[in-house]
Image (spheres, each protein chain N blue to C red):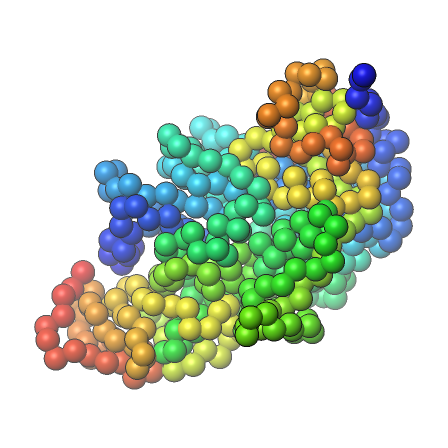
Length: 210
Length: 230
């Protein structure tokens, strides 16, 4: 699923990879790809993650991982970093999710009474990146669908999600809700529909698998 | 003509912080967090502080020392995810926490530093972060009024400074430091190196010394500045 999501990143893009599953996408990007990775704490042109014995104490990404530069990297302050985000300079952001609504609503920052660490840069990424895709397990730890008709948790942003990559499928959020695009190997369309908490449009044609 | 010398001893500068003050603290995680100034503030012991900082560092690091010493009444921040202790204090009602979207926190501070009363933004307008905020329509679209933030004191970490307070930062240790250095009545800087006037090329100055009140040279870098083993 992470390898499949990595194919979403095209040459020429400026991309922000959110904390959690999306950060792992970096390991699946081909070396010939011309892409600029942005991180909220003030860097464009993120290079490979470094082990602690080779780390620079002053060079981290927004998730706290020690990263490196590539030729052409730039550092900047938090004002500049979010000017990039809010003014639409991010072609793509990949975010984690607690819930995604069939209307493209995203909830990924707060579970009242259980998890409330604050939103960080999540609202601005979700609301302002030109394209927002989500990487998430299809169901939560209790096996309940994370893709729902409507989000029940506090929202991060409305109507922002264009595509969802899960361990079961690739699903687009269209004008009429969730549309199945691809399935994971060994997973049927019916399996995906059964694990999805909202109507799922399944095309009549054979679907690719990943 | 010679520019004024603002170098001074740590204790004398920190003693200016009073009970009830609002204190901005630079840093995003470890990089750029003024660890030594924070320890001096703990030793000074000013109480009922409002702290403005991007995050709460990690347990036993950075502003967590202020939290453990019981000096913080209110925290204006964006994310506490790496500090379970801070989340525990918040959930127990021991500290008040106001969450901001990260870039909006930066812009509110920038407005404070730029002499502007508030900014207008639609960030988070569909979320609970909009609760209680005034809404203004601009060109047919609703915007939240995000009020400017200023502080009594800003604690800043710089890589290098000259005696006038011209500053340079390194890598991702820049983050909130330059903007906070503009937005407080009294700006106190700890610098890893204090170089002679003229040693920082004018084009390389990232915060002009005009914004800075006091410069403290760091004699040693404690373990807290080092790479965190996870």
